[in-house]
Image 1 (cartoon, one colour):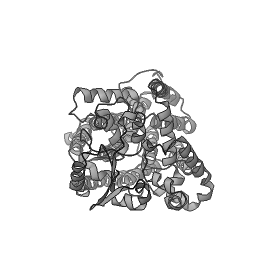
Image 2: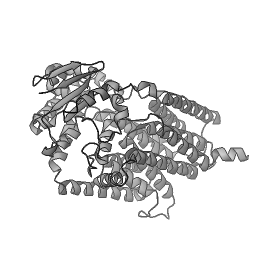
Image 3: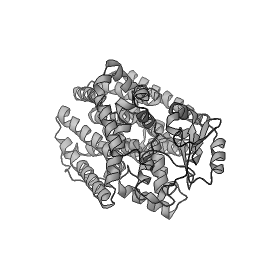
Length: 499
């Protein structure tokens, strides 16, 4: 009996989560997108030489905090360390919420295992939007649990609200999707007045973050950059571009180069007019490309290789269908209908699927009854599958270092190019995995970071070199051949230098 209590205790599950996070920290984990890498380089000072107080996608208050920490103790990797800490704290809060909601129900074990699997996966594949989603979901679930008690008031503060607020500061757009979407669906399909009460403070946090972010941008004189970056994102992430690259390769080569991340705002060629023209072309092509095949492509392109995430999603959907609660089934239908409607207008990247996952998790958790509605053997089977899935995933994570290539060639070339003040490294981030924490950074990247650099003309140099991965260079030769460059073919990369 004592042994059973230990394995179901909150201390055991929180300790297991802490052990998993610490273990993953020492594995070759990676940022899922290079936006995190660039923001880390900015706030740490690796990119510009001194810690920057503006990291573009994060709320400026959070960027300022990061830059202060790096100024205080620069040797500590504050950026990923805080992301790991927030993931663990969110997990711990969710484990506590599971205890409150399910008590001694057999379902408690299933939810603990599911949350542990989510923590392990997203700690290894770190991404700031997903960290925000984890924080906001944990804060919303705890708040909704507390507001089941009708004596709770809308403006009651809980310690967990700090986690909710930090999640909003990381990415306020994630807050809009989860807070408005989650509590809205609870109100529409659950007819729960308590959802209004539970949503008041999160919505105020969201409004406050948005207003202060906007005012900071205006005060810093970055309105033009913000508008141009938004326009750049609208073109770069346009579904008619990323899902139809082969068409634009012939029809509009420059737009095709842009779709592959080859963006140089410092040349003055890629201004507002060009981006607006491209966006108009992409918008007008929507009617030409829409077809059943397009919808299938939009759904599978960015998620088909995410095997473990799909495994987690399938497990969560199994819980939804086992419960057979009408409010949840209608909410699920609404979410996936929304995906179909938005597919021609928004790129369904993995982060979008993850937001849907957390939205479903929040709603299912709230509506799932602690009572077992079906055979206990089915829940034991789900639990067993989760244990096997976690074991298999950890095994693959331990061997993931084999997928990271040696970068001796890159280091050697970067050393040779000391006379060139701007070297742009273009390739998969696995090639510069060991260079991520370099300070100062020995290379530059193209994208919104080069757009940000163009705000300060002092950072622009006329001497440039491009170190380009072969798989990117050969389909985009036209982009690099302007200006009569010197081209040197290496083993995995192509070195392009300009006079």
